[in-house]
Amino acid sequence: MLSIEKITQLAKENSTPLYIFDKDELADRIPEILDTIQKDMLDRISSIKRIVGDGVTICYAMKANPFLLDAAKKLNVKFEVCSPGEFSICERENINMSDIVLSGVNKEKHDIEHVMDDCGGVGMYTVESVSQFELLNECAAKRNITIPVLLRVTSGNQFGLDEAEVERLVSHRENYPNIDIHGIQ
Image (cartoon, rainbow, N blue to C red; front, side, top):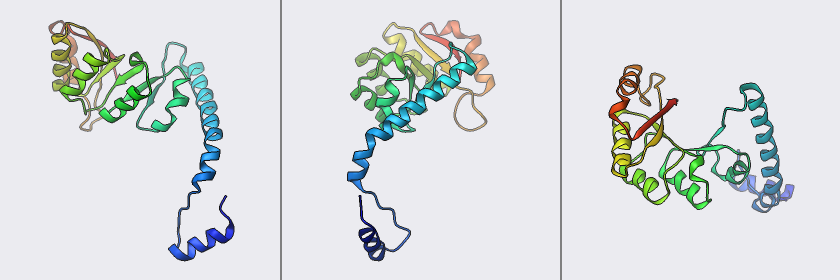
């Protein structure tokens, strides 16, 4: 741990406010921090399940804290992945593909094809736009598979589908045999 003298010296040399990180101290504390976080996550998940019932699955947003992946893997949760970088972390950490919800607006054709061809697909896909719905359908049809999707409804911003688009996609779902609409996000 840094001494008061060293902290005072650094403050004089660099002015304040000053953020000082003792990497050795942090390295010593990480196991305790992760253990505390994991226990807290377990407690929160248990509380949520008591409130909403057993039929609900918690979905951990990878972008929140990808460094907590080891703790989250032990909690029987799904992982919301919104970018190719987040997906590559899941690949590297051997996350079960059926536990991934491929979300976000950043779904390029080559990324979707990689997921479907090289990874066996994922547990769920979210749809942010009509063009994304059509792209997912095209990729699934090319592979003669049916994929599960959630239709994301906009909250009035640029993300998601408006109510009319959701209604149109649902009412014409027979035109998309490679898409299985599981619900609304």
